[in-house]
Length: 354
Ligand SMILES: Cc1ncc(COP(=O)(O)O)c(C=O)c1O
Image (cartoon, rainbow, N blue to C red; front, side):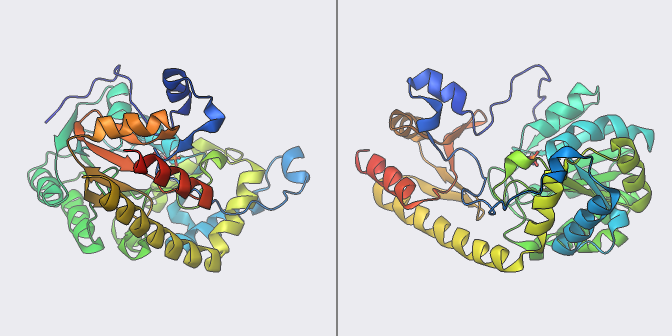
C-alpha cells in the first residue's frame, strides 16, 4: 500500500517535448509509442464553418449523447454526462461527489493511471493506492468493499492501464452490489474498453446506482486532441454534474466529429480487427528481437517484462522512438502500436540494431 504525494509529478506517456530535450531530436521526428492511443485516427471530415463560429446547439449535444449511448450500450441519455475529456471528470469528481455523499476513504486499485490518486489527494481526501496484480485485483477490491465504512470509494481501471488486467462485467457488478450494500461507491474507468465492448458495464448502469463509469473518446478513435470523455452514472447524479458543467463545455467541432465516429460501426469493426492484428505483429517482433516477455495486453497497447527495459527504451529513444517506462517497476515497458508502414519499418530497424 502506497501513499501517493499530490505534489509529486506524474510521468505520462506522450511526453515528446521532454524526450526531444533529453535526446536532442526535434519533437516532430519522434515516433511516439508511449501512449495507448490508436495511431490510425478516425478520419476527420470537413467541419462546417458554423461549428467554429457559433456556440453548439443543445440539439447537437443531444445528438452526441444519443450516439454515445448507442455506442456504449447505455440505456438512456439521462445516464450520461459529456465532458471535455475523461481527465476533466477525474479532476472534478473528488470535488463534486462529496456534495452527494459524505466520503470516508478512497481506495485505488494500483498500479494504474496516476491521476486517480493524485486528484483525490489534491482534493484533500484520504487515499490509499493498493499494489495489486491482474489476478488478485478483484479479491482486494471485494475485501475492501465487504468491510467498508459508509462513504468508501473504490477506483478500478478496467482494463487496467498499464497491465491490461480486465474483470468481466459480472465481477464488476458484484463489486458494485457490495458498494451499494456498504453505502459506498465504485468508480470504473473504462478508458481502454473500446476493443472489448462486451466487458463494459455501461449497459447495466440502470441497476448500479452507486457506480460511476468513465469512458474516453480519444484512445480508440485516435483523437485524443478533440477532448471528449463521458461519465455514465445514475440519472440524478448525471443531471447534476451535466448542469454544473454547463451547456457549451464540448466544442461544436468535437460534437460533430464524435457524433459521426460513434455512429460509424464499419470503421469501428475494421479498427478492432486491425488493432488486434497489430498487437500480434508487435508481439512477434518483440519476441524475435528482444528477450522481453509479454506481461499484459489490450488491443491499444502491450505491456512487456524484462530486466533490460530501461536500456531498450534508451536504445529506441536514440532512434527517436519513445516507449513508456514506469516508476513503480523498472522491469516493465509499455508499447503502443505503430500506425504506418514507415513506422513499422522504423521500429523493426531500431530493434535489428538492439
Ligand atoms: C486509464 C485512463 N483514464 C483516463 C485517461 C484520460 O483520458 P482522456 O484523454 O479522455 O482525458 C487516461 C489517459 O491516458 C487513462 O490512461
